[in-house]
Image (cartoon, rainbow, N blue to C red):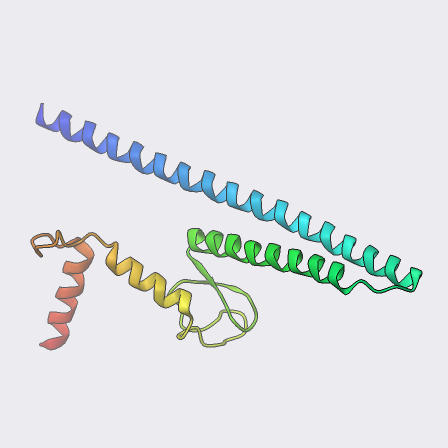
Length: 161
């Protein structure tokens, strides 16, 4: 019966992992859809701004306040889009190169496209800090150590010899 319980527990773990991955994919798809809709709204606002400037120029008038309002709306949408893209990148576990904008695996030292240094990238260092905090390898009393920590300790011990 003990073997049967182990199999049941493993099956439950697999189902939980699959469920979590499904939730992650659904959330990622939702964020991508929101980003796409926001890009569409930004494009419409660019078009409206262009039409506004054309109409004002055609009439020979100026209304800087109206133009500034349109620009401010576009700017706020661009900030929101950037935040959505950051969330998507975080879920995909990638970081954008500050030089060329290429997506790189978190933890990369250099950009795979342009070779720019990613060492000082804030997103990289924040993600590494989160991974260390969220590792869950210690129970607060240092009684439990995960397999990756044990293998690191073993490799550190070997290098000391």
